[in-house]
Image: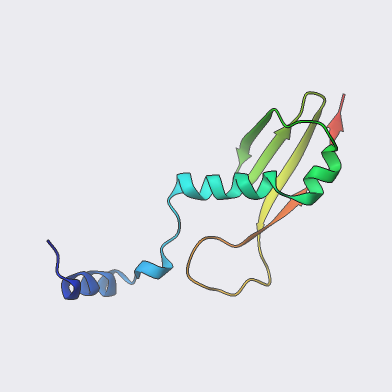
Length: 100
C-alpha cells in the first residue's frame, strides 16, 4: 500500500494532481451526451420529433437523428471558461436540421 507522502511525490514528479485529472473517456462521453440531450436549441429545432440515435462522427462532433431529420452538433471549448482543474468545459453548437 502506498503511503500518502509517497503518493504525493509520485504526483509531484509526474506534474499531475488528483484535482486536475480529466474524466475517464466513458464518463466524459456520457457527460457530453447528457448535455446534448438537454440542449434547448436542439430541442427547439427538432420540435416533438423523438431522437432515435446519436452518433459520434468526429472529434467533438455528433450527428443527432430523428426518423425524419439529421442535425450536426459540435462541442467547442468554452471561450470564457476559467482554466480550472476538472472536466472539459464546452459549449454546444447546433446546426440546422436536414429533413427528408
